[in-house]
Image 1 (spheres, rainbow, N blue to C red):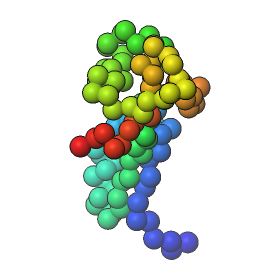
Image 2 (image 1 turned 90 degrees about the vertical axis):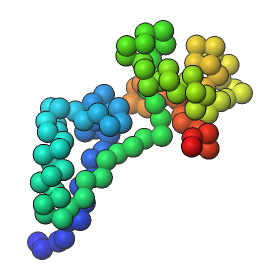
Image 3 (image 1 turned 90 degrees about the horizontal axis):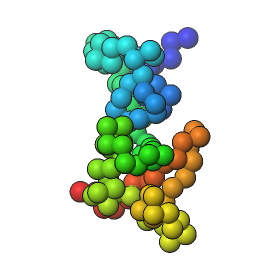
Image 4 (image 1 turned 135 degrees about the vertical axis):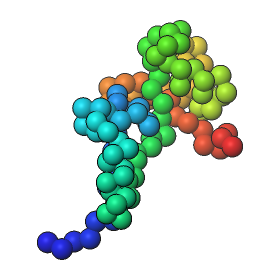
Length: 110
């Protein structure tokens, strides 16, 4: 058709368990090779970044929940006066793709 291709957008379905910066190896087996091939053709690779972090059911398991626990320790999530869950430290919790998630407070970063 002759339409120019400037970028390929990799959305959350291409991420491993919908976790930012972790590609699903079944869909994107070699992310660096993909990026290099696109770059050779002057096409940008745009990775999906979401504003939520998966909130695990078992908040005590450090091996699976390192990202959540680190953000919670640094108090990077939006707090809720409605959500009085001690389990999630009164973080604003919502469901996304049938998983509980907490929202990043972007004003606290930096």
